[in-house]
Image 1 (cartoon, rainbow, N blue to C red):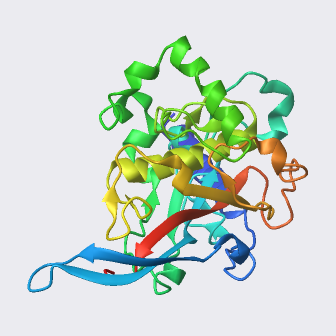
Image 2: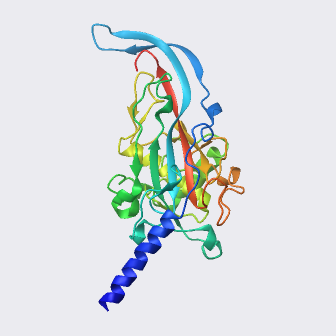
Length: 308
């Protein structure tokens, strides 16, 4: 009996690690996976910011642009990284594995989707005009609150206020507005066509795999704001403000794995805009395996060059 148990454990180890390490794809390429036309650098004029004594104010130049500051994986295979194009480890813990795959599409109607997520900093433009330094790194496999909806309530207890049909139906207005390019910031509990921002976990009540992964990526951005690893650079030209309740219109993203799509869309735009042929079963979009996604995330910068 002991030998059989040991044999099963070994087989499980081989199976899990083989599944993880058999996947591979093209790693993130800053030349092709960032759409530089999205930056939209705009000069707005002069600005004045307060500074410590002996000076009271300083005059600078006011700019706005979109900075590609983060790459976010959302994956069904734990520890697989489309950003690196390779696995970074393996796990025997079933709860870490994703749920909902295109290979099982016949049997997944009305199922929820689950994905792990990873955030990788892209500080490639921090020297441009706004010198910012909040470039977070995060792996949800090591985040218990990402795995369990109940634990996540510790960082967003307000979710109970929105867990009712009236507040969720209100998200239809945000979805309509988001799909024409104008997310409603007064409705932070909504992610456009992606549904609810809560819970801030990988469990998404949507069986559309691409849309659900878009929602998981957006939730990670919200979570990083909530735990103060990101501050908002578009609210104050003289500094960066913490936003535990995110201003979602200050972020946008596009998918680059398993295939590159553009342009960058607001958080929660309907996946029908970009998912044609993106996630073909067993194949993917040509740059990586299917059901393993990578997103380039942009944030709005609004800064006075006097004060960075």
